[in-house]
Length: 498
Image 1 (cartoon, one colour):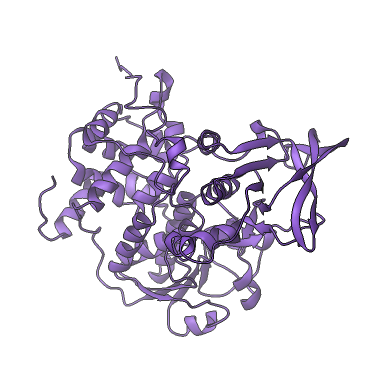
Image 2 (tube, helix red, strand yellow):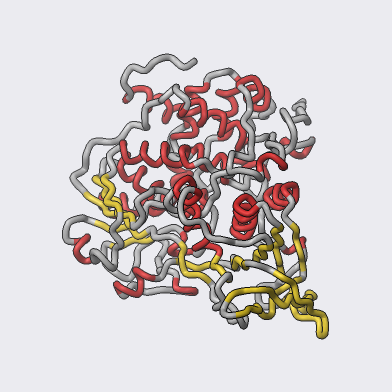
């Protein structure tokens, strides 16, 4: 008889710093497990014969192997279990909404109580390694003589580059910015993802053998055809960039800001640089328009910068809000006000400067083409509110710049069109990640990047008729114990783990 241990270690879903203190700065909200807590939590794992948590993970994280190793105090083994399929393990441990359709949501332990805190255990292992127990990288195959250019060093591009390197291919990455990580760098606030974690793991991929050319925008500074002349394949992973435009009157007033550019301005060159430089004056009354994670990131960032009053306006009700409920709760704890069924119909100003907004009361009407109830205005129900700044975070689509410049075939919302092998309309050019799907999660972009890298590898190796999934290759054709032993056989002698 299987006994499910119902109680996880610490508060659900993870320990957090005090709201009144954390909103005064940008230190991390989520607090780590101790070694003892991580081992106790891992010991709740049932070691399922068919681990559905692995199926639910876009990068096929070996949750069962990680939990078993941590429960036994073998953090070295746990690290390599994770690292085999996830090169950004500390990043995803913090950024994945594990309870929203991913590993923790699939955990069978939740049938008898709370699911395993997979993200917290993963974070413990990643932090243990980064703090001084450096482990070897996974073993790479012999050089193939083939070369690949990866355009974009965000989550998808980094994950793809890492797998291609391990297959023995030469990889050069072109990144427009000077920091690696893409949206994970500038779009995820430091209180959620400390940048030293992202930098450490991204640079580990570079150290595996990726050449990185920074500050160069492909399509402007260099063409795809020139990249093809010096490589065997190009993989485009430029992410999402094109912001949804609203025609609300007054949107051109000084003080009405694009949320994505706001986050890029604050975090793009590093938070410290922004805080010590020419900071934007947001005033004391800030409205944020939108209902996704980015809207919450904008609101909580604005709160920390202003210590003023921040309200989030969303045109649907709370149940329809797409943002991670945990992030909503954290924002509420910090004092962010939520105004549901509210939508600005006009922005007001004097001498070109924003002074207020007309906020229209909404109701949910009949379902639209997506199946969701369509918000519609309630006649005669509008109010004028004072505000010093408005931050718009209402969604964005794929970065269409390169496709337009190079004539790549596109699909809905300007996404680069690809087939099931991630090939584009241009020979030897592949595409992956948000550039092909629109804005998604970091871990899903990584999953797309790894799948695309597998297809590129098959193309370079003349194996295009052998369309093997990474899940099948890792969990069916070989066991995770085989993978672990292969890693050990290829590494140099290491200092034993603590």
